[in-house]
Every structure is written in C-alpha cells, then in structure tokens.
Amino acid sequence: MKLLDKDAERMVFLLTRREHYLLRFLFRVARRTRRARAALSRDSADAIDESTAAGFADTMAAHHDDARSSAERWLKDPAHCVRGRGGSFGLTLAAGETETFLQAVNAARVGAWESLGSPDFEMGEAIAPPAQANIRAIVAMQLAEHFVAELLRALHEKD
Image 1: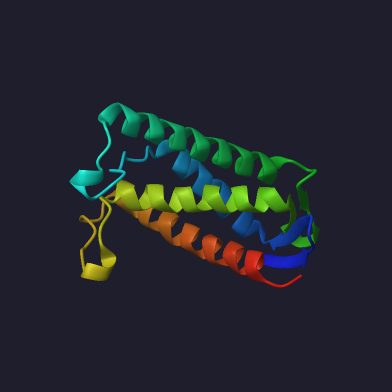
Image 2: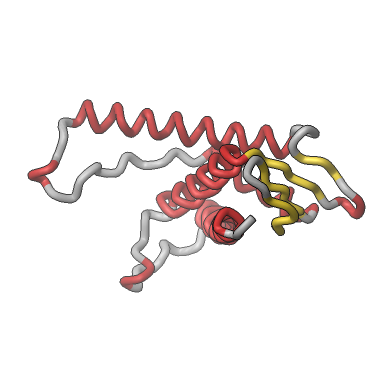
C-alpha cells in the first residue's frame, strides 16, 4: 500500500493485487470475529452500570461494523478502487473515508487480538497453542498492523 497522491480532499493509494486481496481477507475475518465487551474503566470507583456499558459496547460494535462495511464496499466500488495494469489497484478515498478505512482496519486488528485472548505481549504473555482459528487471527492481526502503519504514515505525511 503506497500513497500516490494526497490533497486536502482525497488520498490515492496504490494497492498490489495481493494487498487488495489481503484487505478483503482481513475484513472477512473481522466480520466473523465478535469483539468482546471490555470494561469501560479499570477503577471500580469509576465503574458504570452494566446496561450503560452494554449500550456503549453495542454502539461501538455498530460503528465498527459500519466502518468495515464501508471499507469493503470501497474496495469493490469502481468509483473508489480502479484496477490498473498488472492487477494493481488505485484506491481513492476522501479525507473522511481514509479515517473510516483506518478505523475499520484497526478494529479488525483489535478483534483478532481479542480472539487470541487479549495477550499482553509486552509482558511476555504467550498466545494459546496454535489452532486453525488462532493462526487465522495471528495472520489477520499482523496484516492489520501493517496496513494501520501505512495508513497512519499517509495521514501524517505532508501534502
């Protein structure tokens, strides 16, 4: 994923055929992964009632689903994603769409991490023994980390 052009209104990315496929794979995996409801506060003094927390979690899940659906649609929409020579793709996103695309990729990353049991890698916590579902989640998490980094780099690059 390479930034080709950027101005105040849009960003244009070059995707290889493989990157295009992998992004679609990532969103398919994310669609099947239900994110866990995390506590909104670690401090019990700041805890909120369960129905408020559940409502917030449901709202966030709907937001993530909408972002993922939009990103999947843009990857299929010829107005956004044009197939070029050699099977590459030109992905054009409006300024707000780029942020939504980033949110969708990051939500997929977090969902994959949660499906692995939310291990604390910095503390040396290991992932459960490899199983087919774990391997898919590990691959999805690694892919998402790559695309998040590229999108953040593009967003912070000067016009």
